[in-house]
Image 1 (cartoon, one colour):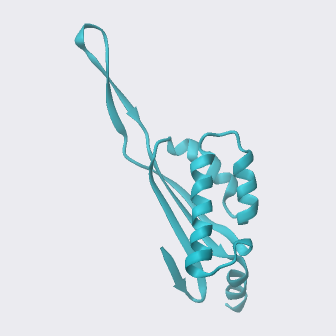
Image 2 (cartoon, rainbow, N blue to C red; image 1 turned 180 degrees about the vertical axis):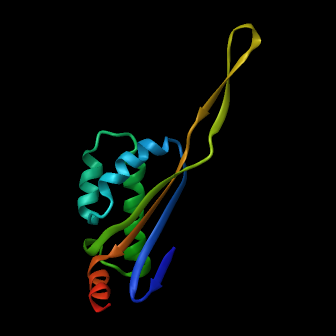
Image 3 (cartoon, rainbow, N blue to C red; image 1 turned 90 degrees about the vertical axis):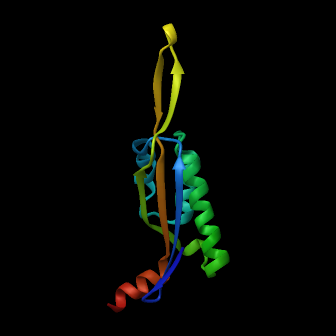
Length: 128
């Protein structure tokens, strides 16, 4: 989704039903919030957490959308908003002794990332 309000362009990307806990994804998202695009890619490549790979793919896709659809320069992008919300649980049944079953609940999360153009953002901020 592309918003164009007050000459500030932003690109919003949403990934739904990622199979991991929202707490584990938030640990990675808190490290990249407010950083530039290139710095974010370096941080995500070097992080040892499993949650960093889907977030890396999401940031990379958002930057590709910004450059291809809107015409923004990737070097001027920064992460203005990043949030993780809990999603539904994937429920399975595991067989146990004596014909009983045990429920397995796998958490999922929804990740939202918004990229903005750094140069246009600071110009609009300085005017107001």
